Structure formats: C-alpha cells, structure tokens
Length: 156
Image (tube, rainbow, N blue to C red; front, side, top):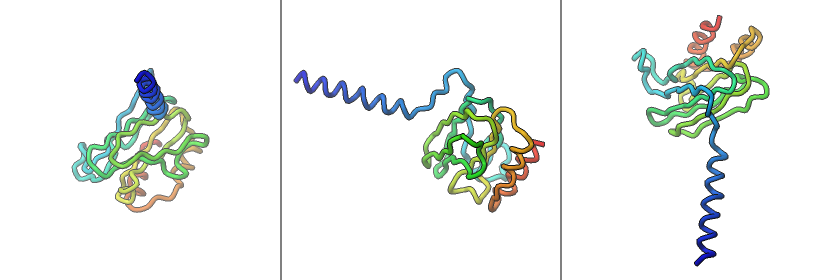
C-alpha cells in the first residue's frame, strides 16, 4: 500500500511539472489580451477580427489570445516575424499565451479565417524602416491584404 502511495505521489508530481514546463512565464511583464472575434466590438461592419488588431509591446511582454467564439486560433505568418524568433500556432478554440522576447514585427493570422482578413500586427520594441519594408512585402491573400495595408499605414 505504501509503495502505491509513493508511486501515485511521484506520478502526480512528475506530470504536474510537465504541465508547468509548457506554460509561459509572464510574471513581471505586461500581458496584452487579444480577442478572437466573429464580429468586431468596435466596428460591427468588420467580421473575423483580432481586437486589437495592432499591439505595441516591449520585448519580453506576453500576448494572450482569447477565443470568444469557436473556430479561431493564432499563428505566425511565414516571413512576418523577426529572425531568431520562434514561430507559434495555437490550437483551435483554446486560449493561448506567448512571450515575445525578440524585437521586430510579428504578423499573426487565424488559420481558418486568414483569407477573410483575420490578421493582426504586433510591434515588439523598436523597429526599423527595413523591418517594415520586409514584413510589408510578404504576399497576403484575400481580405488579409487590405487589412495589413491599413495596419502598415499606421506604422508610418
């Protein structure tokens, strides 16, 4: 009986540490919440949006993506995140937090609604004109192209 108890305690301890290893440490830094919405709360004409769709963060800050309706996720866009930064992709319908340590621009999309324009732009720290040019030249499709055009205009 004692051995079973020890095995259970060790198992719980081991699996708890695995769960913690996958969590993001956001203590002591700002966490920016981004809602994943079917319809904008600020402009009812806009459908399939991240709100806010632009975030200015400091290096080390966290982004917390909150799915308010089913069917959304958050994923980096190929070619639209700084060199040395890790790409990420959340699971559909799951709250997701990521810490961004490297300065630059991050383009983010909702994979199922990307062509419908569900994109966001995150500026981490100081950015250069070269970073803006590189990120803005990444080909977009559908309504994402128009939404990114507006987001990049806001940087200039």
